[in-house]
Amino acid sequence: MLRYLNMFVLIGICLIGVSIAGFATGSRFVTEPGQPTNPLSSFVYFGVGILMLLNGYVSLKMGHNARPAPKEEQKTKE
Image 1 (cartoon, rainbow, N blue to C red):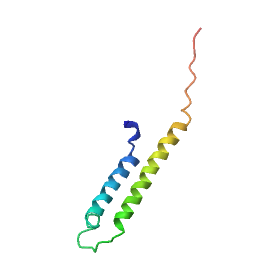
Image 2: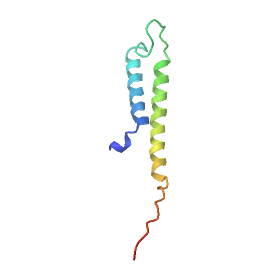
Image 3: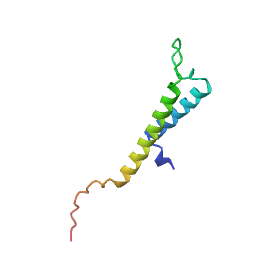
């Protein structure tokens, strides 16, 4: 289970959590203090979170298909 938690997946989960908090507060959670609220900013965080999860999935799948590093030839004494 823990092998699926690479940094792409963790950041994606955090970004989706931030976007949910943004949806719950009317995008006030994701704006800087003093700036006007942008109603699309929660959607941007959600989209980037999904993109990070997709990137984590692809990196996990590509890592399983990679060739192992070549081993040095070991000399055997007979």
